[in-house]
Length: 229
Image 1 (tube, rainbow, N blue to C red):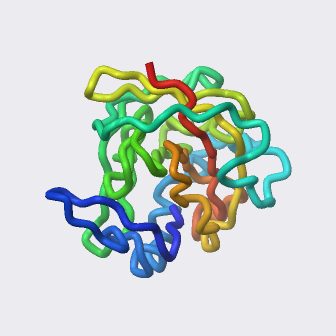
Image 2 (image 1 turned 135 degrees about the horizontal axis):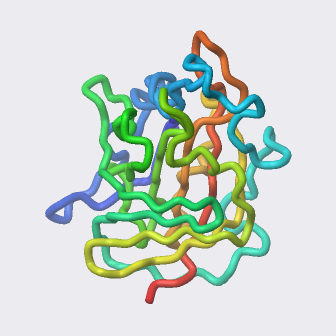
């Protein structure tokens, strides 16, 4: 997936801080091509691809409203960090465990294991879902066996919700306020911007598919935490 060229600093263990989290700078941005392709492995090669391809948001090539999008519900107060374990997206029948993903040795963002269709990954270099800041959850759109966990991501609509269960026993709800498709090589920095609230980005591959380089775009879902019982 494409990463921004700069991300605001975050707290590090022991109270230290960094202006730019490891791997979230230029190196990760330049290496994003392989990570983007890895999220859509190509069921086209196996002859299993839906002729229409995975669902895409309407008006795909457009800028998202970004933080503070119109019509968003009132944000819930951020929570202390806690590791996420499960993601539920009822509108597209997603019920999947979460695994932490980091960076590969070359500085590229790692994707969840390709062979496990129903598994999503949360990026450990960002905040945990529910904490202040922008959490990132990624998943494959397909693999060699067929559609994968985030195949239907582009079919979400504003007002749909995403629930993330955490190790502290809380299940937090995020409400979708925008969707967009961006060229994988020019993902806007506002996708990951810290808004001062608890935000979530769901990302998978999308757009057109090329046999030599995979999917050409990223589907990005923007959501804000609206309930934290």
